Length: 414
Image 1 (cartoon, helix red, strand yellow):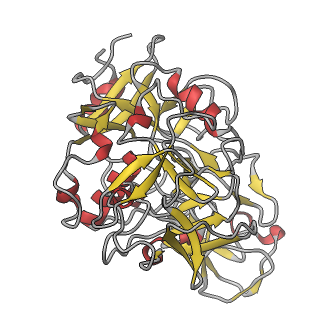
Image 2 (cartoon, helix red, strand yellow):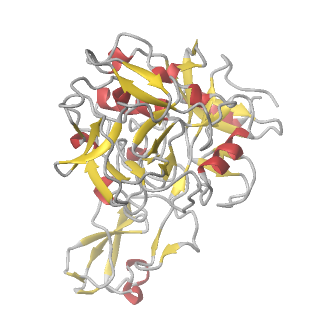
Image 3 (cartoon, helix red, strand yellow):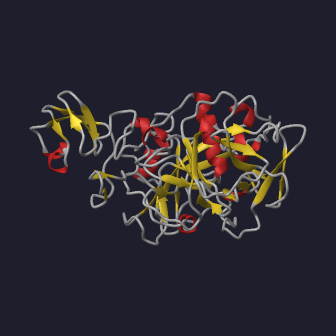
């Protein structure tokens, strides 16, 4: 199909796939790499993102944009696509997102922990630090957030609904004097953020927009700062992280990138989930049945989320640590299994990767979402992991991203 959309995608070396009805999705193609090429401390073997059901893939295809419905509805039940200028889908369980993404067909499924680990390591290798909607329409790096009930002076600047404004008359902020309706108090300077996705959906406490349209922000919102790469991979919404979960704070995964298979059972009751048993003498590991003694768990020690083999105390408290500051209990775990670094769940030596980790210490299942959302400010980043809720929780702040198995073609004809 020689459509204008596919012509434009080819200019950026993107790949367009079509569902059975001829509806497109745009994917970014990443060539196979070794883990050691991403970080010298990792093994000299193919990164697990490129191994699906024992078969090595020459490329992985990751959705350029967050999952969206062609109807523009946030929470309808139709197929989800990777398309620009669309409102990102929301308010679905992890399983509902996955089912709607897979309806596309042609090897399309949800982005996985292995995919995200690859992207994190690739960004770290190249020094990429993408921005995103983290302050109600703009990135925290670009302006101070506009808030109600605050004193502002002449010359102060604030970000509001994707624009930068400068105060020209001192006052206390209020909804009646919002920057977009008060030219006697504010001067609009320039566009710094994205376009509002749902005009009827505002933060009731601050009267600010929440979500932005896919791809409507600045180039800094792309993974590497160029229009050919992944867009909105940080901020706007947390994204489902398929192929990884926490049960009783035990880390559980699927082997390699088997979670990327459209046939993979990723439900809460799936037998595919495996725990990680560390080797005693090196940084290797074995995948074993969940609940096996000595597997990797997240613990809380010395005021940090800590990788450990000891089962933590389940007090249902929420705790957090920056990704780069995640710790290890070396007394129980003298060698950190390399898989947690390959999957972007634990930092490599000297990592400064942005992002915060939130976790509830509970015996129940917790399903991670990644990247940060519209209200996280400076906490967002590729290292952000949000482990508050299970598969079944829904939120406007939770989205997803399609991914596809490489077929060697630039498109699938309908």
